Length: 436
Image 1 (cartoon, rainbow, N blue to C red):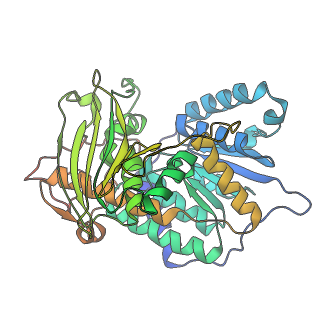
Image 2: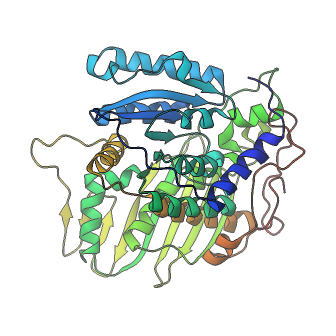
Image 3: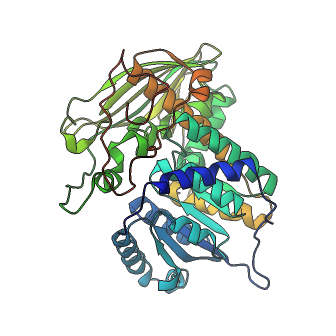
């Protein structure tokens, strides 16, 4: 990796701000004359980005991955090897993977180089800290977008994303996001029944993402502080948002979807019992949050990442006439169980979300899911901050908070970088600098 000076962070933040302050008049990039192939670029070549690219290629005809960008050359190499291996056995799939050496870019400006190509759709799958900047730049460039969740790690990032949402609407850009549950038939059908009154008026619910531990990369002697944090981005709030934001946002998004609203306040607890070694950065390993909605409904949110613990991932809602148990069954007077029509294939939500986005772009009526995931991201941030601070956090407080976790001037992108302290309820403040 090349040494990048401290101005890189400031430049990307400034670029995002400029894109919002001065929306350009770049025309929507459509299909090339005489071709219905949609040219795709991948920004962020880790495991999720590589998987998303494959889901896009497998999910639709007439798509072609032509450009890739990542911060690290070794991640670029491993992603290309995985894509080549995954597509090689199927000629039709191999024909969709046409990335050449001159269309691969590395470094902090790799996203700009991908956006400067003639791709029409970009997949954004870098660590979440970079998502607001990349979303703003992609919309300014007139590209359709698939963005992995979450779309920000702090209130400043959410406000940036909301501005990008408005810009994308003006330009007619399609934006899909990595909330695959919204594209699964079992969730769609069950929630439609809930909204039609199958369980009556919803009074409470529970959403969970409790699981074991995740990967961790041992620090190498050649890595600087910042490179070590970037390569272990899960464990630093400025990069991931903590696991309640990075992962549990899926389940919180389902609660918002079912209720058709966002929470008005959150109270929570959390901490770290297993991940106390400095190699796990400074994030928590468990959270429990009480979300309250304007109509009085309360949702218990719980998430955990601790090895050796029981898994529980899903969502339940309790109504005046029954309840939904996971997202395939309703109990009570209107008892019902989801079953696929005979002969219908099992739908892979990760793939279906790409299929649906491509189909909307091709139809000339691209949809834009960015506002919904921005709201769910801020909901998760509310829960995190309620646990971090030990205070009740309202929606208005969270949205207006002067919290921007971008490392400031004085920290080189590949130089020394302190690890922020573990958040302490009663001491940690909502409006704080990235390392407080």
